[in-house]
Image (tube, rainbow, N blue to C red):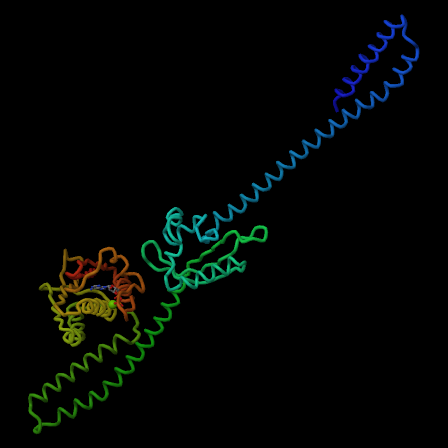
Length: 418
Ligand code: ADP
Ligand code: MG
């Protein structure tokens, strides 16, 4: 505590009482004794005044200091809690967006940028509604309005990725409430496309397995009556024209061959790599697919280099690959045309088999997508064909390469080691 108050008041007191005494002395020629007595009596209250003044100043300053410290502490706490929140926002692995009540994006965390490929700035420039699938938009808006009323919401919508793909996103819509007033919205998103695709894949592969089993059963059932019909046709002799009989027998043989092929393809197989002749494999597939091709006005040509080497492969899997490729080629030629299957050997290391069509072709930027599961442009397509082909060829240490020109045609080249 400082003595400023007491010292100043004592100085003032001494000056004032001295001035009284001087004026008395000038007036009377002496200083009366009671002046000294009064001075002695008043000195104590004057000292007390100075003391209280000093005390008051001391406590006032102390209070001020404490108040300042308290403010600093509060500010620090506030900043810390802001940083805590910010850290949660920035480092959260799930995308978080904040919006104002007019659905304008205010902020988004880095995870949000990965969600749909847009940067935060691109998000800000976009209408949020424009990246939600129009089919889901009304439902989304309803939930948004309910959230503004103060009730958190959760829904699943399709959203459009920057690259044009649809992603399935679950969104939690949470109101930001300050002083009992909703001032905006948090949205926490989660991309569940992968798990939906996995589920779908399971469902489809299950379906394919069932279809395969059914086909195997049906094929087996067809073969028995075929054998009987064939036997009877052989023993009927004179009544029917010999030419008709031969035609019927050869057609029956064809049916038999197709059914056998179906039986082999649809049955689950133990994978067994064997040395095989690629010529035989391709020939059998083409006779299997020829009738379908004829129906669509498509001609399948097979071209071989003179001496095709043998390859080590799992025959049924390779058949599946070429059936898929030739079927795709046929489906790309709705108006008919020619498919060339060209097998060549190069440098004695690899053989190359090209399936060349004259179909609608594929846009260049779509080519990398073809090998992804479920990418299809066909109404009843599975989008699994090329993916399966790629897997099988990889397992054979080979490569699969697609080149295409719009409206000119597509070439799929399979290279396999000799
Ligand atoms: P799916 O045939 O069931 O659609 P695929 O995996 O076999 O599945 O093929 C995926 C997609 O690749 C097809 O939907 C088609 O758009 C495209 N495609 C494949 N082969 C060809 C081809 N020869 N010509 C044009 N497009 C093709
Ligand atoms: Mg296909």
